[in-house]
Length: 150
Image (cartoon, rainbow, N blue to C red; front, side):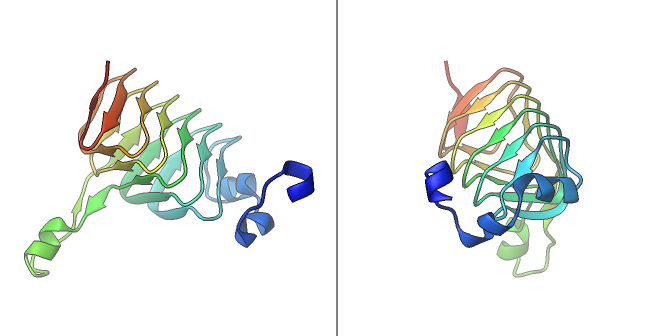
């Protein structure tokens, strides 16, 4: 690996093919998913999308990611939270809401996207952002909490 590609990877990445994993999970043609990606529930991913290492794709409330997206290392995308469950001492349940990432989106490293968020087609989200609301097509987004950038 080092001599051929000038890189080293965790051992799981060496034994698992990213494109085979995506195909096994039923994702679109040409999509790749690193072995270290945690995938939960109902996750739908389009074609030619790259899911980077150490990501979390929570589809417990339904997650849809479009075509030609780049989901960088460390990104976490959620469709549920346990806030009400925790603060009620377990009396209330988890809350679920679908999350949608449109086609042709770039999500920078270590971004967190909360449940129920819709990111419009062609949007860019800067690294280390916390996205807790939806943004329209073509948005440039960044910050914590995220806001539209000029």
